[in-house]
Image (cartoon, rainbow, N blue to C red; front, top):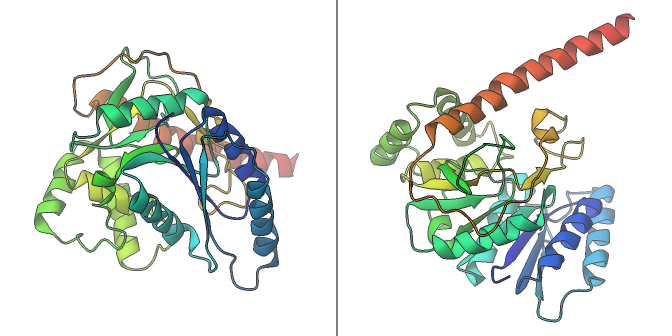
Length: 304
């Protein structure tokens, strides 16, 4: 495989081992691994980061795969570490695949990204390639369609990442704000969510997220993303060690499926409104219902 792969990790060596064992099977030219530093006076972090270092050192990689490591001495956190890691990656690469340690892709994900990173390299309309499809099966006849993207296993280019605005300095730029509002006018759920989260970031009420800034950056520049017709990446990070996904939801039950090759290309480079609305309904409506049912079940369990 031609594309390089970046793995972003912290204090979960069991997760890191799983994803490394998957990545090394596709024999990329380069594997980059960035590990965040321990939190202050946190023995658990120090112990598990040391385990990360040990298992990386013992890796038995293909002779043609180069391993490049970055172990942070200080803890950057769940907002700044991914941004720092991706910045580091794109100082050395023009394109590549990005995986956080709790996002487990299947084999077809890598070849899907590898092909489309080449195919859309110079198309400035395309911001990223997602491996995640929250619908799991979209029944779409082409191999991929277009939406706003998902960062649970994805790929992009240096030319797109350069627009990332981690501190949202451009939030009050009239042109960008107008683009942002216009592009999301048909998707009120997503618009309200992103707007609320971005304002929380600006007002320092939310300091653990990095991806809302990325989505503002690309949507406000009229860029769209590639979504596979079926899901290629499973998120296993639904536990109390996670920052944002401590409890399991319906999103944690979505399975992966191998996509077929050769890919069936899609020449209609515009948002698939029907599928995006269907996805938003599944995430926000169904997930809310799922949480209500789970809450009711807990109450009944205590009573009886």
